[in-house]
Image (cartoon, rainbow, N blue to C red; front, side):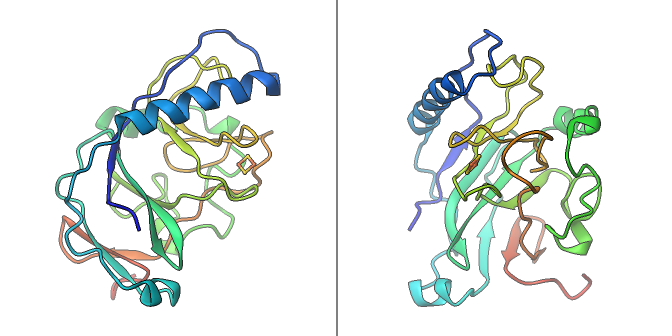
Length: 210
Ligand code: FES
């Protein structure tokens, strides 16, 4: 089970533009190392200890996100139906630029059934700042890596921040929307969820007002 680690967005970047797969793999290895090194145990997921049996059965889980700061990722955590869940706190600047390049996305309006209806909006979330997703690439299920910095990458010289899947190079924006032309066919899944309070979110159930 996860320790509820919060990872700061801290990718390494190479500025050389090269879309060959060989370079994809080199770049992604660097990212994995950087994220792992940045991890620090932050015990703020107080109520998130359902039993293994409950998790396997798909029991909802409750997460306290009160200590999650803008730019930080909580996860991955084996949370809902045995699937890792990401909770990413988006910065104001991220929200402002999120829809600047929608022409590059495969499903910019979230028309495919990859999220609850109440998250079929421009932010793919209930609270625009808080992005909640299943952390499994929709290609073959690897864990996409957060790379929130807006700096050129090997895989995208105009990278605006997002999630990069190291397995085969799929790219997703900071709403989990997949870019066109990558192996992953769909946006990342948004699980059903609702807020008990501003800081406590229940994942695995729709809210009464959903
Ligand atoms: S599993 Fe993510 S690109 Fe293949």
